Image 1 (cartoon, one colour):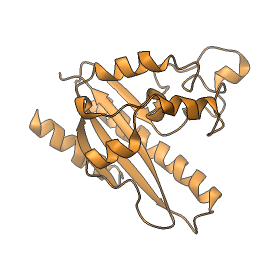
Image 2: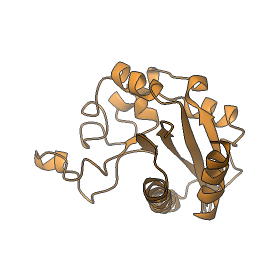
Image 3: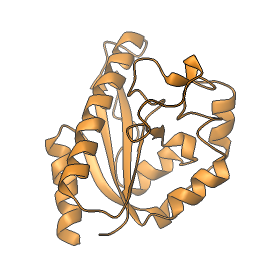
Length: 185
């Protein structure tokens, strides 16, 4: 299994993650207060996406589900900005992160035989241009839909620190996180 874990990290870096490591779920710090940020609509996606609160599910159930996994591939993408107010650059970084996240996820799904995986990314699910939730319909691609690390109550700052990945990557940068949890084969 150690070789598999080492390969996962190397492959994530090859697929353009800036940083990557394996994390143990037992060491993850959870904080239910992140749900309050969602309820305050701090990112603008509350009640607008199937994979965001409240429709993604109760925080206790999400934390319980995460805890059923043993390990995960944690990775980060870092994107350069013109300055710290470069909103457009932040959005471009998010789109680029999503592309890298989907490549890594597809690679894991196609090349490993984990019993189950739980992919988590940064922010709202972006698989569809417009979420079916906004049209009062069920999710069009439930097998591709991904919720965020934070919506699952995971303390990203603590997770990054515990994994040896910098949370802050310097001035004029924006960083996004992906986490693919898995059961052993």
